Length: 52
Image 1 (tube, rainbow, N blue to C red):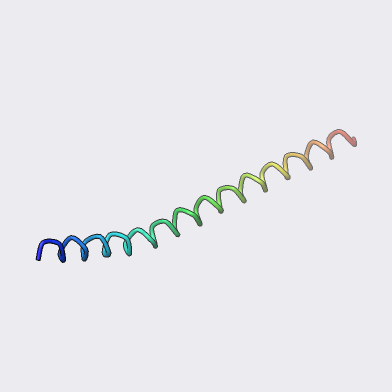
Image 2: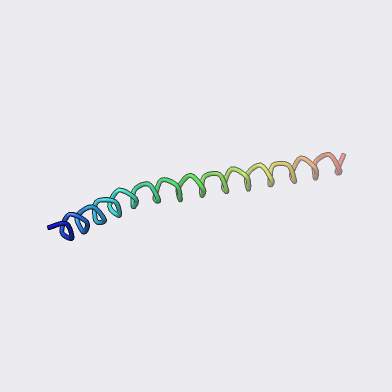
């Protein structure tokens, strides 16, 4: 009986962790994209100032 409860608990924990990990991955991807956008905009600003 205890083993069954343990198995059910592990399944529930794993199922709860899947959406959390997906949210974490999406947040990391968004942060990486924002950092890339900032880096490219800074590079373009540097290029425009150097052209002047």
